Image (tube, rainbow, N blue to C red; front, side):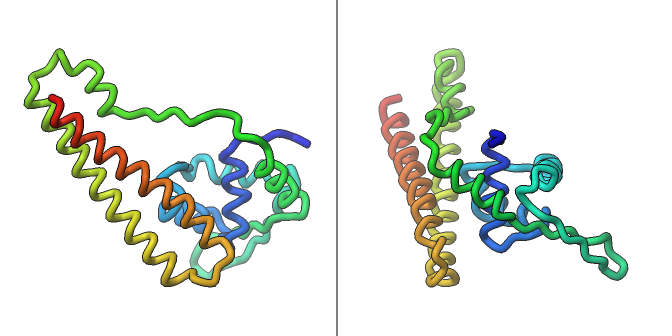
Length: 179
């Protein structure tokens, strides 16, 4: 079976949630997955085309009055098999975070201490806002998707985000205190 990149599998997975159009896929990405996986429109449509050509999805085109035709995508059994096979494979690599704050802090000796502290305070504030966002998302999932069989898995990934964000806030406090 042909091997695809992780973005391809992300789109296959999104198609299992009821999203059918490129627009729907992007909306779900922006609401949910963008906290840990980003996909642009520039990736979505070529990937959908590739998935169609590989017969992992089918496409149905619907004519709309006064609007461009709407293309809706559905997983084929071959697409579901490819997703399931990918899901069962071992993780290939531990993710490496690109973090501007850490990069600047690494070279922090070369700027005034008050600037370093201001950057850390700003970063901490952004993290606290992110944690609030995660809490809101959690409440929305628990309220609106209580019976959805995917909900517990969404909450697992959300818990990871909440925990790592809380740890980063603690790190900010300790680093600010140490400086």
